[in-house]
Image (cartoon, rainbow, N blue to C red; front, side):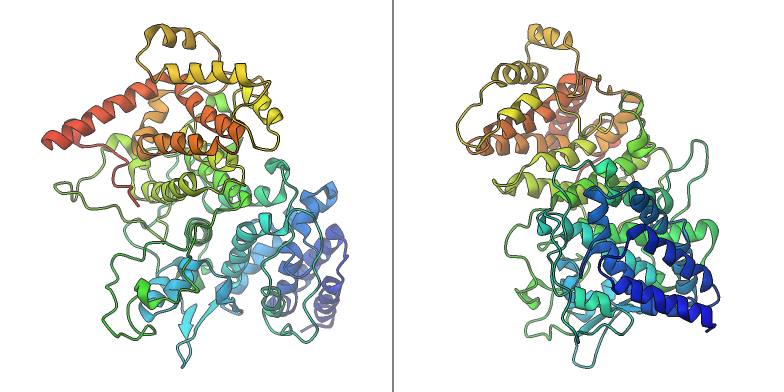
Length: 587
């Protein structure tokens, strides 16, 4: 190691030990250190990288992401976003190190999602994990005593902590911006991942200010940049990156970034997408892989296939765990990217579907298999549905449906349900801005006081008008429907909401039927129950949903036709048109 390179790594490591080190200046020093370490990145990733992640995500001290989202300077925000950019020097160094397989980090298994911990508990489960892109190449193994261990390459390690920060970082910290005490002296910290290992002792991460704009939050800016880089939407008329949609990647965890060009982007996209699904779209009661047989009576949990009875109850979740607002917002960004051309950049009045004729999403590793229906095995969705009815989009839809169904059924009364509705609306009506709300919702929010009482004050008249308008198109009342159609649909900002266009969005609706036919009645029941404690919020949430159908009566007509076909099939078993999409989502 050259003297200047050694001094740069050593000095940067010392700088990161200073809890109040300036963000912009330190980011510049990281870039300088990477430039001086081009011939040998290993010292940087052994000595500096774990400490850098500690500062970015705040596991053992000041959190840069939290600091910037609470009002950091423009220079700090720009420097951090440039440093963590997927096209920047840091990610280029990650690709180089991972291609040579120079560095592996031990990831604490107790910080993994519950479903992953369940699979780690048995040999069959570890074999299942080895087929996931982020755990291929020998990342998962067990020692002589059967205790599992996870060793990740640099990219997978970074993405795991990124996903973990979103999962645990928002609500846990309370948004007060208070620093926590550093890890005690003498804790393991000299090795590869020592800084992260000693940081993993607490789940209370610095939070972000409640109600801050997600479009100005560096966390979501990073997420959007990673989605555009790792999962690029195909340009109009251009062939998308080809992926393997019939089987999962094997050994992708170690050598995926050794490729170049489009192959490298596809492999990195498989890893990134797999990590997001694993961390944000699984839960403690996740169904185990259906292909794995049950453990025999008296079988050894360390060697038998995965079975719920073989997993310690300390791992399995015994109660519903509501997703944090950060996870729900991050999933909304993901849904917008996978359904709307241009993602959040697309205007509400000109949105077009991102899922065209050719599939471009990878298959997620955790798949909720659809139930087998008698007489329908092997039937494919109509070709007219395009990629929206394909395996990858349907797999993501089933995962989101499971999350939303559980949330609408079991959401805690003390927590606002608006983030759940926003995520749902991103799928229910992607042609609209998911944050859109009729103007009366502002009055409802203003009149929400202590959550008690059966009715609100000032917004009541507007609420009644809007609920009547929204419900009119769902009831056989021609006069009311005509009166409702004459009213313009405007949001809280006064802008006209995007319109449904059948040519662009009919495949999406038909491919996600349970989001309409199952979740809308469930949401109405949930709002009725919630109204006893949070009447204004319950009314505003169902108002946002019903307004979708008030603004698009043709969607209601199409759903009625689908229900008629479903009744015909149930009676005679012969649907017209070769079947529909979106079926088999029960979980």
